[in-house]
Image (cartoon, rainbow, N blue to C red):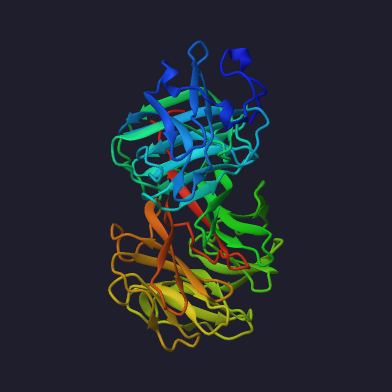
Length: 522
């Protein structure tokens, strides 16, 4: 983000750009030419009238505004817009003019349901201190939430509405677009598309300059391949489970899956292209973990309770059967095989708090054709069958006190969450809403909550495919409340297959996706 010191070079607004409100007396009605937009107005209860100046020679807009904020349950800002329908992209370079008063002043691009102060909307804004995020309000009068971008001080922002999703892209000067972060938010048509500025201080007026403004309707062909063969962009995110706010950690044009959170809270582990990577929680470059000859890892991996070991499920053998191995968290040339079967796969999912017992999903054809939970003690002894359903039992994870193993099962005729004792006794159903197919329950380290990924009824009973509308839902472990939605996203297989809570039980790491397609504007 470049900070501009004056507007005089373009013959636009003159004078100090963080003016007291009594100095900002331009009548918005005086602006006749506002370029590719139809209207502009102050939204909400602002301290001073905002204004727009447009220079058609260079296609630059300067917007001045007061306003307390664009946040919470209603907004105060100046907005310039045009009405549109269908899929659309809006992009702009954004610069603040002058030093400013409040570091949280905001300027960016916005899609909005209307001009009511509490209207649903999505925007991508650059703050005065450089914070760049997608903000959104899902319903009239609802709370605003955000997805913080992986870079600060973005020079360019781009917001795309595609179907019922909005997508964020940001760019540094001279760099490529970084697309990461999506939210499911349906807009009734027509909706407003435009530029927005808020001073974050109703006693002053702030100014931002928008250049290279582009509004492009997108006539997108239906996507015909959404399954495993579809190529996607992947976004590693961290969700604050209390506020619902999210932060982008890492974005890739390739598929990656299934983050684990390190026991000391400093890094995340995920799989991509058959290999295992670690990345700092604050973001940065991923580093491959050496797994020796096992380089066809799937998304069933995890970290030991003491944080010193990594467990992987790998399919590098010629028979392509998934087997389970343990190695030091730093990596090893010679991981140790701990679970194997000559003709059936094993997929790790849970590790007991005392470090001795692992639980995994497996088929043992000599016992049953069903995939059930199996377990093994690392201190010795044969594996044993933990559940004996005729359907599918999967996604096991231990409670932090070791008293329960949580899992998802079709045994009720729907894919629901269950729990069972580590000796296989007391199978107990936990979720009951037939409108969801619930997968991969993970207890928080403090034992208070369970998070899960929930699919709709558009998926087969025993399937958890990629590239679907999904919900992250959370509920108290004591069952005192039903699950509540904490995030809506495009995801599915790979989003939250394995334990991914932060050690302090306040956040969860997950992966969202976006299908690649050739007919989007560059």
